[in-house]
Length: 129
Ligand SMILES: [Cu+2]
Image (tube, rainbow, N blue to C red):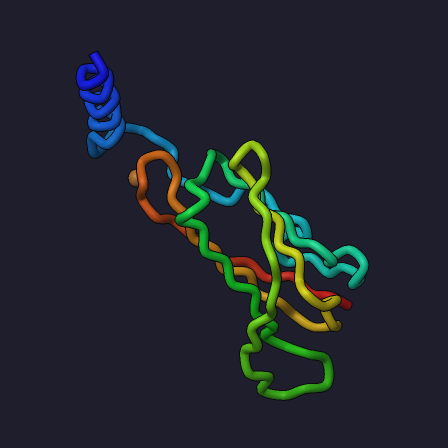
């Protein structure tokens, strides 16, 4: 009985992974701060990413990098440390920078896999004024 349940599960997973089926891939639907926005530091104490589907928590990778700072030429990319928390629905992740973000431009790069295990990703920038 148990084996047939496993077989049925595997069969349905196999159906899900047939190439060419119109399954959604993990895609960023929105973020706070939003892409290309300029926000006061108080609005960037946490950064929330919302995906179109559940992502597998163990596959989620996110980088937060400061790419520019007012008055600094040729600012080298500086990684920003943060802790993170997946949303209860599995479709969002919240980044909490360990320190308040200084004025400057930040790039968020994420990748993650949804149900079909294909890793997708993208990046966006926002600016803290
Ligand atoms: Cu896929």
